[in-house]
Length: 232
Image (cartoon, rainbow, N blue to C red; front, side, top):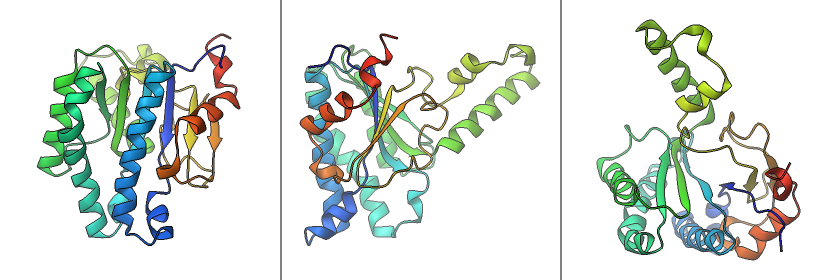
């Protein structure tokens, strides 16, 4: 269908809690439905040969949500990776995580780091989970690392450029996304990949993420300029 598929797609998976409420369910049940939709999107990316998928799973601002909801969001990666890791290995999927995972619960961190370690040599679709991530914090921690390296004579001030900054960000191993998709009706990027999406196409849909599917992903790509970005 597309002459050129974007290499890297990023998605803000918004609307899970509201989907649950609209269905007469809890917000946590909505988040679980979002995980199921995430699986469908991963499958779709493999089907249409997208190379990298970045998913905004937990924002650094999400800590302000009710404690029970936050606890469930911390539990979801444990359940998800325990169930899905064998399948990811069979399908050659590589898991990366962008964000500060030093401050999350031990069980969550262990599940995440195990998934990264087990899949590190896989060469298929890269699924990059943005977890405890904030775009401003990403830039701030990069600046701090660079300042420390300059102070310790590991980096020359005159050598700092855009390409170098890229290597200090949480997403240092990845090219920038060509398209950022946000579900759930909001038309803002909510502190997500602020540096990385500076040239990305932005696509917004009112559909809550649990209802997002392959056809909607293809529509987002096909209706944007992202399908032409690599060829230019």
